[in-house]
Amino acid sequence: MEQGEFEGMDGLQVLWHLLTTEPFFWFILSIGFVAIGISIWVDRWEDQEHIVHYDDSHHSNR
Image (cartoon, rainbow, N blue to C red):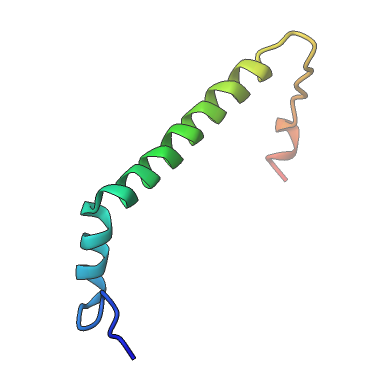
């Protein structure tokens, strides 16, 4: 049986290896860009006039 690439490394060394390797870096970066895009899209959709926001602050003093 072959030994794995991370054999003999502790968790911090594995994390550092994953963060400094280019494919994993681009994967993390793309997740961030997707999250930013969804956030901008939802914010623009929520600013439309036909959406009614109800004030539910009267329940905060119970």
